[in-house]
Image 1 (tube, one colour):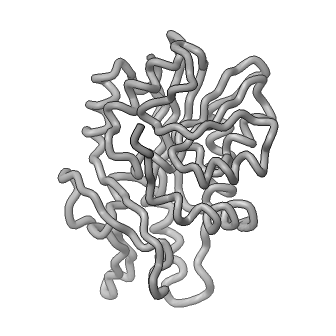
Image 2: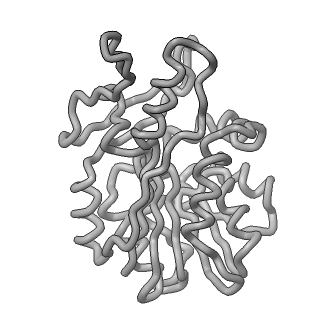
Length: 250
């Protein structure tokens, strides 16, 4: 069988260190509390964390659930997950082919900050439907595709109006972009990001039998330091969301 590869395998060590040591990360301060609120996990909930990385969110689910399983295509990230939580089952499997999972074996599944690193979302959503029970739900968290488009969106400053705005150069066209993990650093590792519009996601989810039951847009928790643009920058963060959350059900 051909070995599955991912651009995230080469940065597994850095990513693990970042998540485990950065107290002010978006994962810890924004996504985690909102995600746990949306999931509202019970003791008997069976949860599958698809594309779980090094298991940051999987471990949090385990504090509330009876059954938690994680899977990721990256062998290096799963090794990190096993080292941090040997009691949790983790599997090296791509999101579109969860070979270990039986049909209709989970009540809920999550894909957190990973769907935009995956090429074939149709296959991923089909596989998620296969492993979920009737009435099960899939929760997706992603960089907001309407405002965060790799190399096609950026912050801008209107000096006359004293307003910070979000510039979007294109949105509907799908794209594949190679991104530097450490911009400005010589010989930085890269990862692959795929941009898709909201209608691309909704069409694929509908095609695979999912209906959107909840949509939320989450803002950054960051605050600007004292300066002439502080008020405008903080206002822009509140008005232009950083993340999109979709809860979809079968």
